Amino acid sequence: MIYKSTEENIRKAALSILEGGLVAFPTETVYGLGGNALDPKAVASIFEAKKRPSFDPLITHIADLEKLDELADIKDPRIYELAEKFWPGALTLIVPKKDLIPSLVTSGLPTMAIRMPDHPIALSLIRQSSGAVAAPSANSFGYLSPTEARHVEEDLGARISMVLEGGPCRVGVESTVLDLTARQPIILRPGGLTREEIESVLGPVDLFNRTTSSPTAPGQLAMHYSPRKPLYIVDDLGDIPHKESAAALIFQDISRAEGFAHSEVLSLSGSTLEAASRLFSALHSLDQQDIRCIYAEKIPEEGLGRAVMDRVFKASKK
Image 1 (cartoon, rainbow, N blue to C red):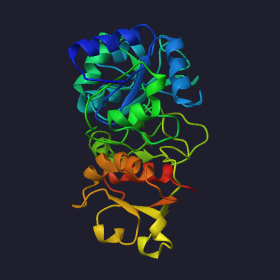
Image 2 (image 1 turned 90 degrees about the horizontal axis):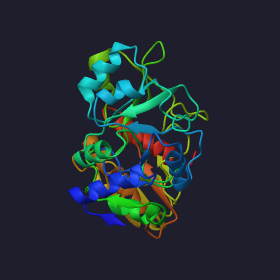
Image 3 (image 1 turned 90 degrees about the vertical axis):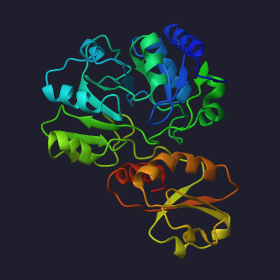
């Protein structure tokens, strides 16, 4: 059930988390499915509700920088430099964990994924609950991430305690995951913070291969973020046969929609920022249509375009 995010309802949601319940809540990236990161039973409930494999680690969300030292064993000063620059924000850091974090959260890895979301409802909820909330995206595993409360209700509504309403997510794609535990900093998942912004602080960083069967961070699996209708990436939407039974996901040029049963345009102005904010909402809309498949055209892999194409690639049939 969707609840207005009043102070009373946020307190109610925080109490639910403290009692082991699951609450969906808005962040600037996507809606998260939150449970107490310090309670192994609550963490197990997250995996169960999402039907998520236990080898895929979760992100722990905090609301205050002091919590970082409590949960993680920080020895690299660059972690603090990045946190002070980009938190609250769409950056998840891979850091060595302390024993306080259950191994189920990290899928048995000695490192944890941690971030501070840039959303007042999320921060208030975290502070009033355990101060550490494990929260993957609030959707069935592998399906499209939710950027509106109704997306969560339609998918997980019967499996969780509450959905806090926060309107459409501003960024619209998940956080960027950055690993500093290796010799060379590496982006494990492109997301809402661009590579260029990170490199303005750190200098050159590497970009991880799009697919892996052994994830060290959330969102690395080859097939992820997928609509229930098959999605194919194409170079030219004009070459598609039988358009009348298909849908098109278009970056900018509305004329490319001609002949398709349905279409969604990500940004008429060609903004990768707008494209990212609209991506999952557009795919949710197309997925609900009576079509046989979705064709997606490529967009420039620069700025947030890199995160958009990462999600489209992982949603596509290989």
